[in-house]
Length: 156
Image (cartoon, rainbow, N blue to C red; front, top):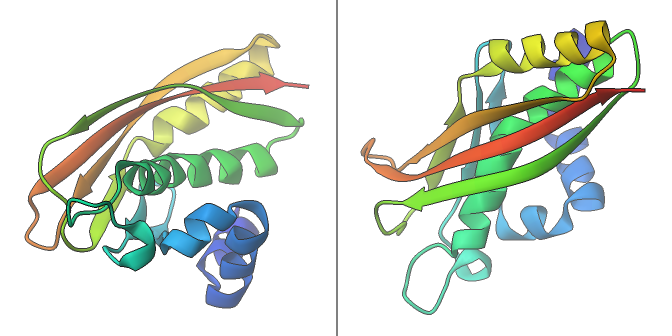
């Protein structure tokens, strides 16, 4: 798990990972701010490649940053698990509360629940689902959007 956190926080290595595995997110400027066993923070800027015609960040770019803040901890625990874990987003609910006209930071703080869900999938051999929240805020701390991402984990 520590090696994954070092990898994710290495600016060049993680940027190359995003470019290869999530090129749309990389082009839109979605970046990792921090990842730990307590929280994961990502950000997406308001710029030409992430804007919509209404002079705000395109909703899909916000969704990419929100999903990444939940997906990185899932990858961290899945890669360090004793068995191979398949993981898949099976649902998403979004609420947009304010126009995003600058950088938006997404924070996922339900990381311990994700670890427990993966451990349960390993222990029971049954698929486990978990809905985890990511909250997006602007630099003033005002809520821009919330995403409830449902993940499914299955031990192989």
